[in-house]
Length: 527
Ligand SMILES: Nc1ncnc2c1ncn2[C@@H]1O[C@H](COP(=O)(O)OP(=O)(O)O[C@H]2O[C@H](CO)[C@@H](O)[C@H](O)[C@H]2O)[C@@H](O)[C@H]1O
Image 1 (cartoon, rainbow, N blue to C red):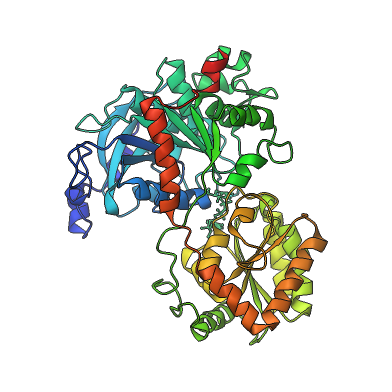
Image 2: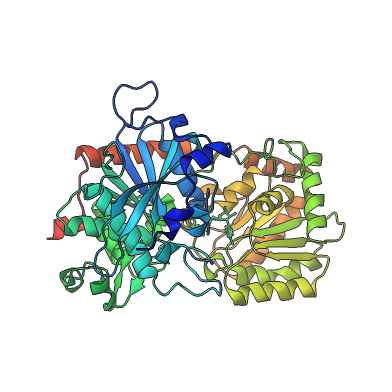
């Protein structure tokens, strides 16, 4: 294999000289002993394709940055992800700690280790031919899927299985996870590779978005070292293809998704993306649960350094300074009307077609609209056209920056989220913290986090009429200052702390690691 990635890696010395805390400053001792504890904390590996510290395509990156850190007080929680270009080029030193064997056409590669602040250890897959590229983790610079995504994410899944089975020693001290927490289709094969070796290390599989399934033609199976029997038995077969997502569901011990409502919805044909039958079986067997996401403490309008003006509840002049800033940033006219916002991946899921159709009504009624995001080219173009039609009233930035996103949450009065489905949704929670009231379809996590008429506005039917009706309600409330401010106060008072999600995850991990879980994987029940 090429060693170019390793050659470009900064050594710990280089990191230390650039002011980066050396690994010895970690809160967790290498043995897995927590500061002040005598019992070793249980080792858990969190397997993900995004981490906001380095690269984020959407909400998975945020969750991967926050949830393992929230669990660090209880476990020796470490993370595994690909060493994308952003990882290699980051300021953090990478120490090469192991060689990982390949399988079929999955190349061998090296395993590196990065020690991030707050005690989070990240294992990274050093495989330049698969991961060091321009574009996003999933798409090339022209928005097309990388043609070898099956190999790339099979590499991620296989590495997790190798670490769990002890096929490789992941650290100087022989660190080996007692449980894998796998995320989305990209990690879906990890449990499968383990079970095919007869290893029953417990696996939790979290679905952040069922619509992305990792479906590939059966010809790929031999290239990924997948036994044909797994396809013939139907375990990974999905309408003639094989499915990373289905493998994750079948072979893991427990499935979670990111809100209680979405956990119910995905057992129905309307939301189950063809897996509703299997997921209903999981639910009936007690193997499917919803654990809501939280948001981290950086979402605080009083302390957020990105904002034009920090502000607190009732400091509406402070919030107004952020609104003025956004108007200048997007070249909008001075106005006393409401400012609506969209902060979103621009994809079908998010219902941007409804927002685009509502835009003219918003402008005619005296409102303004700002949009930030990127995604499907037709949606991007439709938004650019809207901006051209309504200069001074609609501003659109195709792209994404964390700073702009935060400024928009702080400056806007209302956030539009007519999502077709929404497993949890983070943007509505960010908006609420910053006093921007979400107007959203009553689905998934939106239904669970927005109280209609109190902390935002919900509409039931996904129709233009229902959405416009909700927007009209927002206009009316905006005109009743006391009511409007009361809703803002209620929204800003909600604390979606990760602490609340930690308890159910701990209960689940405990059940699985002690063998107290009532049910093991469906495959083992069926077989
Ligand atoms: N173009 C872009 N590039 C980069 N970042 C962008 C972006 N557009 C928006 N973001 C940011 O990504 C996050 C969006 O997260 P969401 O949870 O709202 O949706 P997403 O569909 O990505 O996540 C999925 O996973 C999460 C996590 O479980 C679920 O909450 C959600 O319902 C599910 O669809 C926010 O931090 C937002 O600022």
